[in-house]
Image (tube, rainbow, N blue to C red; front, top):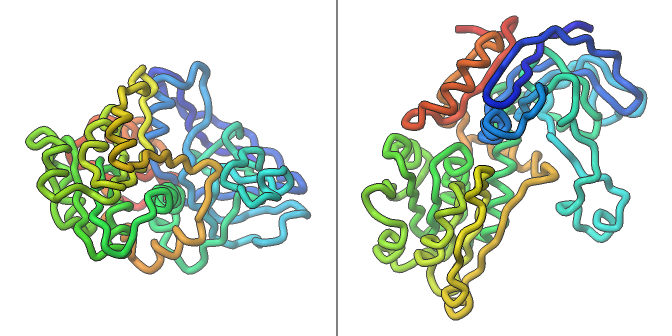
Length: 342
């Protein structure tokens, strides 16, 4: 089967190629791609992580077109979301109930094609049924799973005051979910002011630009935050420790591959403040059924999350908008040309 697929190489050299896909093996499925989201990690790949041309795109909604003989939980014609990686079920970590620590399972990161294509071969294990859902909701399952992992890491309680740092896609989803979990204040902070309106739409009680008021000042204004979720570069962690209440939890998912991953930490503030700094890293991909339910019920509303849609033939423009349009971009999705409707 010949398909069109996007490849990327640092620095942001994107090309469309014709790729021949073989028939699926016994544990594989052939997926017709319906849509794929542009992720911040795709930007990191294009910026510094792709020394050779590689397929990319991992936030995928699709339809099953062929299955191998060992794939039993889906059938041809089913709409699915795709886990970018899974756990193996066989190692000691999995058998001891820590599937969240296993990265030995199936994945599609090294496939001939990925989400920015017409079709792809994937391990059957990666397929999660997503029936009776709008495609634009299904494509958000992967990033929503990341937000759910962050929410679980933060352990938000019924009356917690919550600060969400960074109003990108994961931050916005975190706000929407946190709003359902606590009766306390949910507050957002973002460097650029353009995204603050999105935070308010998704359920924040208040939103601030860190260019106008510092994170510690916001913490003081609200008497300290019980739970803080960071979806911003690691450099903000020290300020977030200051903004946390006594006994507060700080969960973070931000990364910086340009040398900003090492930051100074006031250990006294953590120790004597009984504060906890926790990392959230949704690998393997998890919580897809919960994420799909949140999207299907509108707790996380796709229409307020997705801001731009492009055909696959304009993948370079989709990536450019994601990189440069900091004020208005939320989630950019790419749809194969044969399915795209302007």
